[in-house]
Length: 168
Image 1 (cartoon, helix red, strand yellow):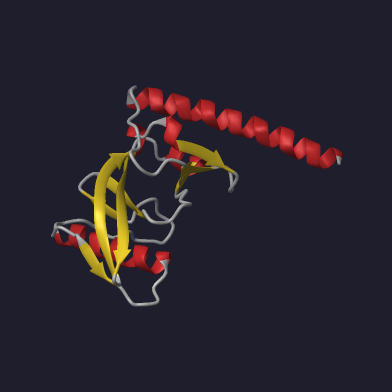
Image 2 (tube, rainbow, N blue to C red):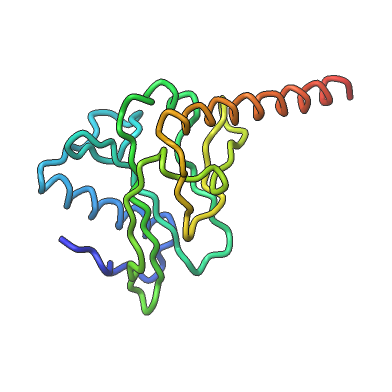
């Protein structure tokens, strides 16, 4: 199935639209042999072949969008798995969400200039650039080395921040 538009309720918000799109994409992959997660605490929306696929949607008419990808702790614990994002851009016109772009990206192909570690739990990897996401030029191994460097820099900033709070 090629998903190009989704009928939506008149009062549906961004989260409801995203849920509908995600549901339809998961159902499509399940019909092709994919598997839904067995628990709510998984890294994927659907498992397809050897891929852990997480669907991320974006309303291109909204100014602010920094989708959470995955906690850096969970990512490091699962770095030997094939974690892939299905990035879906849509636009709402006349109560129909039109899919304008869909792209499949293994996490290690996303350039670091498009991501940031934010303060949630032990650190949450977020997209800061959500359109025309550049590709990482190195290998998967080099990407994970850079992840460790980014995590260390994040944790050092957090230490400084909390030491300042303690001193105040």
